[in-house]
Image (tube, rainbow, N blue to C red):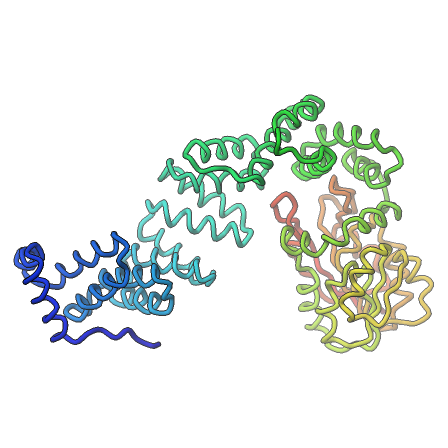
Amino acid sequence: MTSIQLPDVGTTMALVASLEANLPDFGRIVHQLGHPAPALRRLGLIHWENGRFETAARTFAAALSLTPDDPDLWRDLANVHSALDRDEQALLAIRRSLEIDSCNPHSWQTLASLADRLDDIETSEDAYRRTIVLNPESAAAHLGLGLLLFRKKKYEEALSSVKISVELDPVNGLAHYALGHLFFIASDFTGSVRSFDEAARLTLPLDLLTRQKRARALTFQAMIEGRVQEALREYEQIAGDDREDLEIITRDAFSVLSACGHLEAAAELGRIRLAEDPSDPVRRYLLDAVLGKTMVAAPHEYIEQYFDCFAPQFDGKLLDTLQYNAPQQMANLLARHRTNFAHMLDLGCGTGLAAKELMPFGSALIGVDISSGMLAEAAKRKEYVDLVKSEAVAYLQGATKHFDLIFAADSLIYFGDLEPLLSAAAGALVRGGILALSVEVGEGPGFNLQPSGRFAHSLEYIKKVSADFTILETQESTIRLEAARPVPGLYIIMERR
């Protein structure tokens, strides 16, 4: 459909005559307003408000046949078509309204809501923003934009938009509900509880997952305030029938507290967790990281156990929650220097997220990882000619073939001292071969172990330890999100001398 067919004027005037004969009030409105079109619109609105959508649509169309350049009537028609799930007609009608008057915030709001429902994110976001420019006091537009940005995982912007919506319309339970979730993501646990409670007070029932999140927020906030032991004792009473396994709560609390910089609370919780299982290499290493202990690499047993357990959920967590796309960005950067390789190595291949990005460069791809769980997931992709369980440096030192590409996405973050790895990579590459890698960027001239358990490096340090390579290009980027905040990173393409 490219246009909406309106009745001819004769048909509409016959309808007007019938209405005047059968509805005396309608006739008086026509006389009062001096034209049948606004009377028809008023009648259409009555039909719409009473759920008679088909009749409302016909009435609005009749009015438009008499005044086809009325943007408000086109918007009314769009809304009633939307109520009837006639999305194509609704879009045609609202776009016609905006062609006539592009400065009406109500019409942009209608387009935004319709496009949002149809999952046309770009159109919807643009329309919400236009609505807000034209009417900054539109609480609905701020909320709609905030919810859309929430889905796009642009959490800081979403939080700002929903806050404004609540300020403009403080009795909207949905806005408080969304604000509670956004405050939680931003680690404002006091704000999260306050918003959830306000949503409930405004008669918006909290679902199970939200009630559990509220209990977590109360618990995490108590830990931040230095009451770790008390928070653990009181969690079951706070959560009641909604309680989760306390092991999951302590694990997630430790992760959140470390990521948000509440290191004293994280350390206390980490000691409690380690005391429960002193032989656990994951708990020991992550506590050491929070305590700021000096290390040159993550222990092999930590990496192996951590990623064996993490493997089944790895892709969903990394891609959806953490917004990780290093393989794609690195492949795009790599393609600016070379597009074909005979022998490729995916070093620290994990579940094989890079395989899809590397296939256009060649078919001979080997994956290496220390975690058998991750290799099992990578095997499901059926894109590697071989998958090898090995520690990275050991594999490179013992490699029987030389590669013309070594691709290391998100694997160097578990090494502090990169000199042994880069030296081994140089030995496994042909002269002129390419090493593509990613690192997280930290403060200071060298490398440092972060509370997350990952190492950060400076570009100056990498230049210092890569004497066997020529750096062709570097690109700063966000590697992932950590506690909903961007983690600065660096992609590097270097060539074996």
